[in-house]
Image (cartoon, rainbow, N blue to C red; front, top):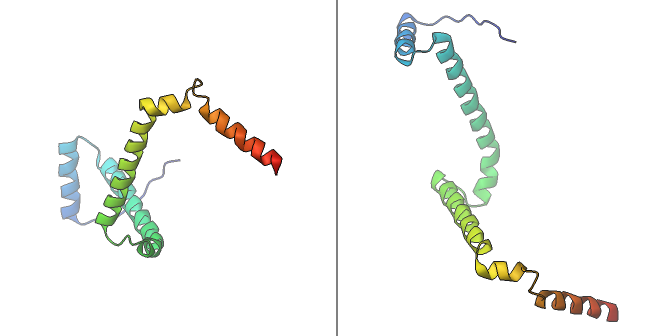
Length: 115
C-alpha cells in the first residue's frame, strides 16, 4: 500500500530536484523514492559489513583489494573446473565404456566383505 510522506527541504534542494526531474524526465517523487531506496540499501550494507568485518579480519581479509583477490581466485577456480569438466579426459572418465573404475569400486566392496 502506498502512503504519502511530507518532508521539508530547503529551497535550493527543491530547485535541484526539479532540474534533475526535467533532465531525467522523472517525477520528483520518483527521484526521492529512488534516493531513499538507495540510502536504505547502503545503510543495510554497512550494518552487515560491521557484523562480518571481525570474521573477515580473522581470515586475513582486511581491505577491499583482499575481497577482490578472493573473488578473482574463486572465479578462476570455477573457470578451471568448468574447463576440466568439458575436457575429453573428463568425458572419458565418466563414460559408461570406462569400466576400470567399476572394477576398482567392486574390488573395494570385496575387500569390505573380507573384513
